[in-house]
Length: 142
Image (cartoon, rainbow, N blue to C red; front, side, top):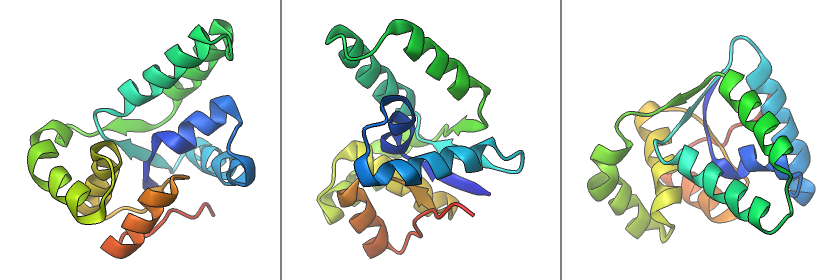
């Protein structure tokens, strides 16, 4: 199964702070471990992940050793970075951000899902709503 992976889901694997959404995040992670699965992410995904990790470590909410283990697990996962994110940032992504009143970061996931015709795995309520209005299917693990 191929899908677009939002940072909100991936970070829940590390922080385990998604409340009722934690079960969904765990199911997505299990799906990604399946040899037939592949997640696509916008080029900025790594920066989002790194930013949250750095902030949590600085606040001493997260040990570096745990972050490193998480990053190793991500590196071993079939996660592919999109090469067109930057090219579309000031056109398609900005238009989606305006149309659905979401951040440009969230719009980059929506743009990728639309362009790739893939479902979107996200815990972000605003992004879920925008995806539904845009006709993007939300990813449901099997």
